[in-house]
Length: 147
Image (cartoon, rainbow, N blue to C red; front, top):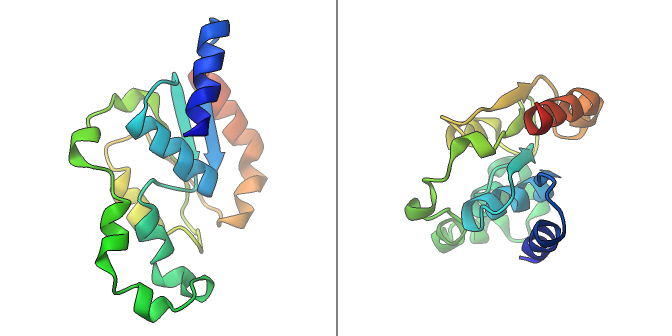
């Protein structure tokens, strides 16, 4: 992942803490980095979770997927994007998933089930309206990273 190059460069040139945050697909990438590389100090996947196959095949967004009825039957897509069990034992205090409980794109129930047991923060907004909470999210991130 290219993001790992950024983390490595920062780590080799600074003693400052490294926090990765991403929104939607960027949140998926931040979460994937956490599970596969785990080299940043903190992670904040916003309105996302790393099971990308499950996300893109959710019936809530089928209008965005060409040939959804055919593609959704292909179970290998869902399996290929799942986090392997051996990678699920990362330190949970390094990641704070931030979800929107009225999200119309990322299935809140699936995301909540995935992040169960993590320090999850939920906002009563939708996928596109999460940005009205950015000041609160920014403060949450700064408080977690800098205490």
